[in-house]
Figure 1 (cartoon, rainbow, N blue to C red):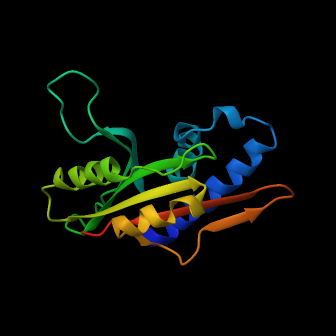
Figure 2: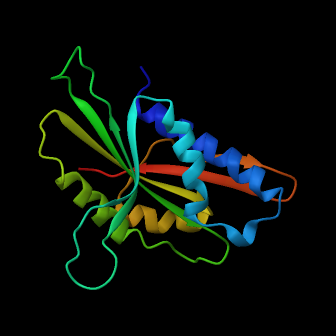
Figure 3: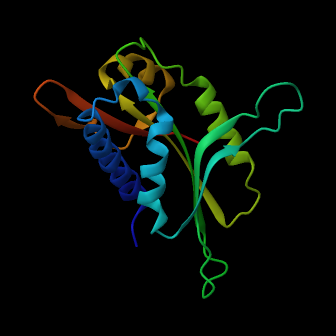
Length: 174
């Protein structure tokens, strides 16, 4: 069975490949985190997870949209082992392009922490990640301030003729 970290690294590799593919079609004006939803769903769909996107984490009785996280992957139950501890993975996707000076991750971390609070089942272990697609180097100081754990020492990169593409995932500490 695939480890959770291997799943996240596999997602990073797929996201990076998809991003390079899109860039060759000159669709850079359309880049946003939502552009990567479909390939993420495809990459996780054949694995042993229930997939949900745009998952409400706080019911907002006031005006405006309810705060949501981008993805929830919950390990499917195994009927042979009903008491087996399963994992729920909450993911926020951030796209960092040339125009953004710094990403604000505070709300994303708050939403992922709220996601964790939704689970009352002791047989479900929660893991929370932020995936940053794009200008990693611009974000290093901000990321250090949040004390996030990167899942690899360096971002996954792909160098093309005129551009280097980077993706990285950070696990949110408990």
